Length: 173
Image (cartoon, helix red, strand yellow):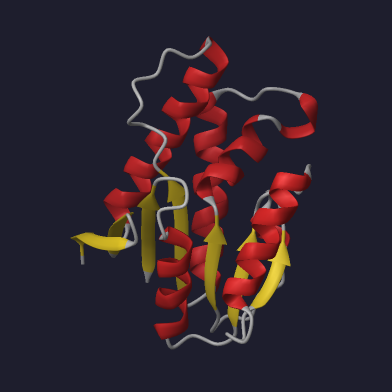
């Protein structure tokens, strides 16, 4: 099963995704943390997320990209936190800038390979598309690339849920 959960910053999407992961029958439950920890604010967010999932029995794997090389048992349920970070990690890999088309292909190929090896995948994505834009060209390309990924994943997902102010709206089930 492929589940996409989208929402704004601090909307409750991670809490919802973790609860959804916990409900799935696959074992083990694996939390793929995709964000590199680069500053104090990110360390605080990581601590908050770790506290949220303490005692839930999740195995955490930190990986910024290239999910194909991760050893994951076939019956696992996996949560990817987050598509937003994963997209940035691929787009800005090794201090370079990869084109949006390359990023979309790389992420979808990795996701396909992972989904074929495990029971369930829950993907968390940030809604960064509603603020009206007006960014520099590179940021606009990143936003368009992430939007394309969200649309393409939503099209094939078994479930799509939006989380707003801690409340979930199921768009596809």
